[in-house]
Amino acid sequence: MSNAPPLRLGVNVDHVATLRNARGGRRPDPVRAAQVAIEAGADGITAHLREDRRHIRDEDMARLKAEISKPLNFEMAATADMLRISLLTRPHAVCLVPERREELTTEGGLDVVGQHNVLAPFIAKLNDAGVRVSLFIAAEPRQIEMAAQLRAPVIEIHTGAWCDAVVEGHKDKAEAEWQRIVAGAKLARSASLEVHAGHGLDYATAETIAALPDIVELNIGYYMIGEAIFVGLSETVRTMRAAMDRGRARA
Picture 1: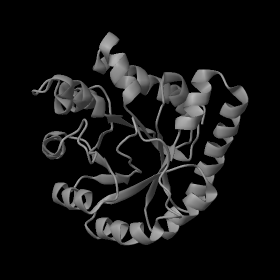
Picture 2: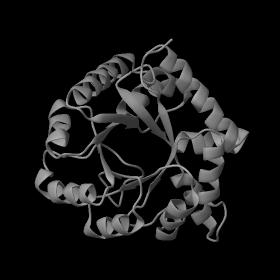
Picture 3: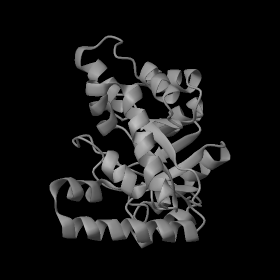
């Protein structure tokens, strides 16, 4: 039996909103999706309020905060407008991510080393408001060390490069990225940071990374919403939860 701490599953509902926005109107409702995910075993809900509102909208964030029974993780860029909205919404946590208008999805980790002067007062205001701050970063020692210096209690390791290499069959690259994640998670824990991970995870990669005892939360969205088209969201959440539990048992 594993001695590792429990592993939480955060379900990202952004792409339920993407589908809704393709035709306008109110359906499918990302808040309903969040409630279904929670009923099926999700430990929290993640939603990214982008500057261009391409999927999640302001009213979605307000409703998620008001209507779900589990913690809300508010993903956003470090802008004055997003700070204002997050302080009004008061989610359980804010995850700061890089954002470019032209990107299809978040392409890399936040450069906390290069942006530390901007991020320091931003993080301080959220900390003062009682909102847990997570920094979405690559598993690079200098980024992790700066996150600790900035007094962000949580980091989320960007797993996209590793997941892409696994799916594409690039074994050497996948192994190199995996070792970066392993070392980064250990370094972060030694710096007293809580460690989360996410981006590009599927059943197989979630099961693999669940075996790392330093990681306590996985945030997964796009893959699960895609699978839900075929088997339903409840079944997808249960299957993901089972994969994570199998991996955790090996920790």
